[in-house]
Amino acid sequence: MTLDEIAAGREAKIVKVGGEGQLRVRLLDMGLIPNTVVRVQKVAPMGDPIEIHLRGYELTIRKEDAARIEVEDSAKQKKDRGQAI
Image (cartoon, rainbow, N blue to C red; front, side):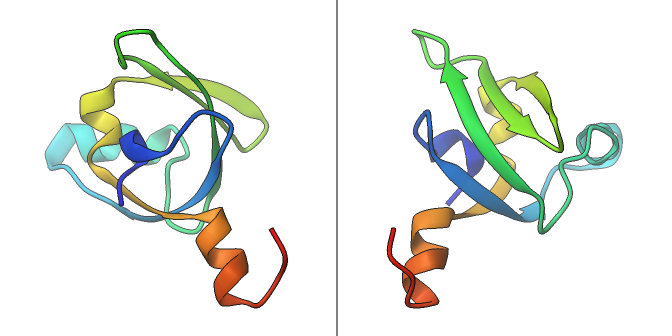
């Protein structure tokens, strides 16, 4: 699953940051690194851009860039650990 597939209000943990060259470096520099929990705050009416909350700040990224970030949905993580949602 990728970050652009997460619904507004849901949390997910970053598993892998894709992309190549400058794009990947830029995403990592903005704090989008593996094992970071992010929450999708808002999605624009046409689906682009996406506003996310991570590490105490808000970040708006393009849907195209969000599609390069592999995540694991928090609800699935809790279910796998046997916790109630």
